[in-house]
Length: 219
Length: 172
Image 1 (cartoon, rainbow over the protein chains, first blue to last red):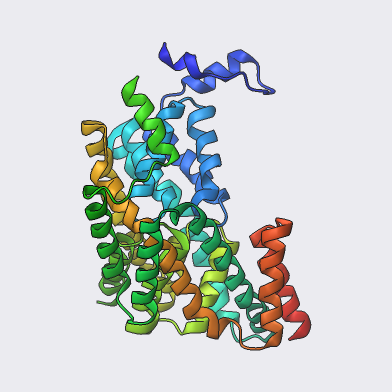
Image 2 (cartoon, chains in turn red, yellow):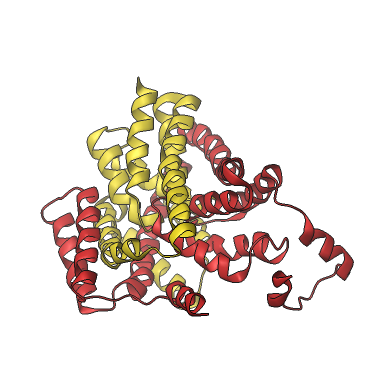
């Protein structure tokens, strides 16, 4: 089978027979639910932090997807609005087990944060005026700024490269901060500008996923 | 009525939050703090901080928290369902289109514009919460130390927040 082609030898305590057995498990909706429940429960910070864990749980251990399919999945997940974990859960579930699979995967990925925040919120709203809690939050608020500044640098490094993207980014910033334009309008306008620019040949964005995809098409 | 309002508001947030994480902060802030006044600015920053030290996407965390505060468990369920639903629907649509056409050329073109705008959104979010986050010299020091520690000494962001909370208690 073609699946065997990309299998790398992995260091594992299981016997090859056990590994094969685990790889053969079919992706039923219920099994997808448990897989994404584990992913949702152990990814802190959200977003790209979860990609290695997702990869491990659906590409490496049960070989439900090939590496290239996973790269495509990430590209689509990044193109959809909303949390990347929810998007990956949706399209993995859909691809492997239809609409039921998508539904079970999304509920699995969402449930851990939902329950944890429910507990945290009910405790926090009760103790938020406690002097220790207030002092702790006062200490955390400036650190949030530091985290966001990191995000600006990290995202900026990959997203702002061409002259087109610098100009567009600055225009968007001025619109948001100086003219108080609604964020939705800024996103829609930026998307339109992107389409216009690529039609006119002003911008091209070869990223990793796209590159792989092109390789696939020419193969 | 409030439950429906929560659902619709978070549906809108979910539909237009590209780039994930911090990029959705300006939109959440506009809807939750400015428009509906469900949270104050400093409560909003607290929710961001809490989201960072708990597992899961920031959007879901914010939805669950705000929903619970405004309308209890049903409110949090409605807000969470609202924020997740657009992602599911659009992802399904894109997967279908991709499986059919093997290409997302228009979507990719849109993203050449959206990606730089996402950076602008995060900068705008940082600027708008800055006055409520850093209110004194100690705060400025914590922010700078946390930034340097994460950037140059690879300190884990969750650990940075926990340490900042400990410093807050020590000097508070």
